[in-house]
Image (cartoon, rainbow, N blue to C red; front, side, top):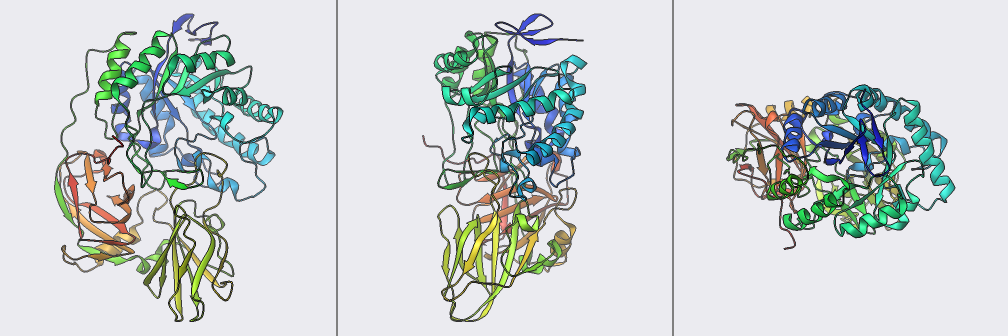
Length: 597
């Protein structure tokens, strides 16, 4: 069987030097029917390896499960990598960051407040043991030593940037993870990956594991820093940041193709190996986008285009061509290049049927009757929305919450009252001077994926009070829009189909669900524009495309071609606030928003 080793200076495959030229491609951010296309285009750019994270919470949405169906089929993805004649690098965390909700750590893991976060705490390690065992059952038979594509497996991720544990405790944790992987049959080289500074590289690795570094510029300096911590063996940039992610309310990030190409050339000229982060970013479908919080909570956009060489919809960009030209100076590149992506079909969809969200709440989840408002985690709502309901009196005057995570629409007897918002630190709203039923529709906009707030609960956290009292006597209903297969529940589509039709030119008040149908080109990518709408969630043919928000920067949602039929396509939009009109448009191409340039 083939052997992959860490030599004195280079990676060695069957004794021969191998310079890894890899690209990041997360299977869970790409429709599975498009995996083969994206992998093939990586080869056409000149890459010889595909790297992917494994997101624990994708495979284990609930405790005691490990799902490998559909978009979770890591084995099929790795087999497609092998079929294209490429190698693979697998990074199973357990923490991955990746701007993914919770950094990949399942929210259910932290319902026990005693569970350690990224440390050698017994309950945390026991859960990881189960997870690693399940991952290894897929990865171990696909290692290069077993005739498969997998060259290396990562231990943890950017651990040097996390926490303040002393060195011996940090090493105890990392060694526990490495031992688990070995015990479950992972025999290819293990490695760690940290940002390219002395502190992180020193804190995040082990002497017996290969250290790799993450950076996107100043290549000679960064490689020198890595060499101080990895005195022998190959140098590798495990995340060569050729773009960046976007956050709602900020600008769209871009980097100049020429600058990125020059830095890549410096890397390859130095003999270093590289993994482009990202080669193809893909999409944060559903409620999977994470968030950052460094004093201000910033949720990540649905698009994870990342200004990558291969765009969100699989089109080769100017950056693709610039990096391909650089790679061609260092290794053979196929003559074939990807075809130009065609313009998408353009059409208008009338959202002709509507139901109030309140009218379907009872079909979406079980109501919990409690004295004090539970967190989302208390009612096993790992993402999305929970509706809280209570009663107020005329003299309550103001509603104050200790903490809202992350955004709450406040209404009295169905009439909008105000907004509580984590990003703007708005935790109080004035109340009308009358008695009635108060509802708070609380949205989890993505669990923090980086830093000390990993593992925190969502929803209403702490006490809720008014000018005169603590508010008690609550109903809390998780809104579970997805069925067991991840599709929009039929209770919602059935209610919408049965609703009477309405005109397309009228404004729309939320929270409301609307439905429209369209015919188009089967299998063609589409781009959905919701100009004139405010904030919410979209499904096409019961597949959740993700969130939209007029705050931008993203102006369109990507609709993967495999979702689209020739006729009878259904669009469902949950609008939380209001819309100018009852139409949405399919437009010719993506709208990712303005950059700083």
